[in-house]
Amino acid sequence: MASNAAFAEVASLAGDPARAGMLHALMDGRALTATELARVAGITPQTASGHLTRLTVGGLLTVEKQGRHRYHRLASPAVARMLESIMQVAADTAPPRRKAFVGPRDLALRAARTCYDHLAGHLGVALADALVARGDIELTADAGIVTGSGAALFENLGIDLAPSGKRKGRMLCRPCLDWSERRPHLAGAVGAALCKHCLTEGWIKHVDGSRAVAITAKGQRNFREVFGIGQA
Amino acid sequence: MASNAAFAEVASLAGDPARAGMLHALMDGRALTATELARVAGITPQTASGHLTRLTVGGLLTVEKQGRHRYHRLASPAVARMLESIMQVAADTAPPRRKAFVGPRDLALRAARTCYDHLAGHLGVALADALVARGDIELTADAGIVTGSGAALFENLGIDLAPSGKRKGRMLCRPCLDWSERRPHLAGAVGAALCKHCLTEGWIKHVDGSRAVAITAKGQRNFREVFGIGQA
DNA sequence: CCGATGCTTCGGCCATCACCGAAGCATTCC
DNA sequence: GGAATGCTTCGGTGATGGCCGAAGCATCGG
Image 1 (tube, rainbow over the protein chains, first blue to last red):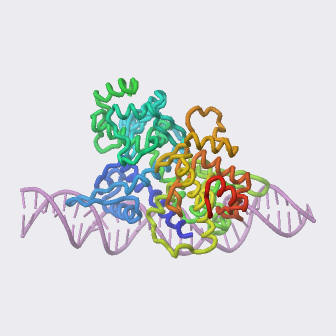
Image 2: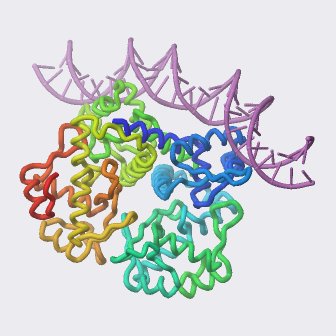
Image 3: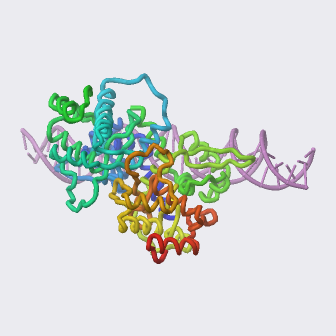
């Protein structure tokens, strides 16, 4: 079967440590330059260039040329989901739990970070837990659903869950097992909409060149008042 | 970050053509012996042995020793989902559509096959379509739900959707993009239960050592009467 | 017991590929 | 125009790892 070769090609593209680091850095959905990606992968720009062309022709990345910079981003949500699923297997496989935390940067990542287009980390899991506890969503390992009260909540917040317009039935969402918390957080269209809302409302903001996000004072207040999340 | 190495390790395990072939063959959820896997991968048993130990210590496979045979199977549903997601990216990436079909074996796979624990191929997609059209389930790209009428249908068929018992809310399911049809079919707990039911009722049966399944006369009749699927 | 079967380990060959230094294009700024 | 920046291509080196032949353990059958 020819599809087998394509499968191996895609998997091996993700299977190199340097490329894995780049893909990991791109998991927050933003576009980065070749030099930035070289730095996070710990290699020289020449080597990174080779990796990036391979990833691009392999269909994992898309490139956007802008002046003398070339911005790279994940080619599709499907790629992000693939990376998620690999991370999950890797997390199950490698439980060599180290000293609880390795540094402030890692600590920030565990507290709150983006996972492609939605929120993960302690904050992401706490939000999912709160929504489940309030009966606004229901989650299993495979899928999730927004209940009537959840739809009302999101509408109140001004979050539009039906960008396509042709939504007739119930809103569906998707769970995404958290790398650091080992518990599901909210992904899919609903997770993306919620994350976007938190960013535009200024409840959270991106931290430097990391996937971590910082919770603002306004965010602290809203997460507590709206979702009943005390400490983040 | 140390998790990065684990990620690359897992991905590179799936990234070798021979190992990819083995994993692909194991995607139907059954356990195969080392020799069988060597044959499908087109390599000698010694080489396969090395690959299998690597896959096992890497956490992708589990081994069950039985006499002088050693049965290998996917370590977890998470691994199956990972393989699915890689296949999906590979399918998006490699559209070098060949001559519509390459042979009868491939044709059988496209008609009906298992995908870990649920049904895929033309049959799987047709079932999903029929259930959606009848209003028994709702599906998006990310998630799915069983409606009230769907729950009644499954109960009528004698399919128990709540093996855990502690199900209080609605049954949730999961879409899985089909490799050959490029359209979603039914996965998750519901897909698995439906597939199991079809097998135990004798509607379909496994074909030799392939992932393909054959639709029996009884299956033809039931698929038409129950789901309104004419030709399979 | 002894041979056959299933699987593994060992040793050596070979191809692939990641890596960097150096040099070459393109773009922007002065 | 000339220098600096971002990125790429080229060439050569080194290491990883896939592959098989041969041999070594287990298990099943007679």
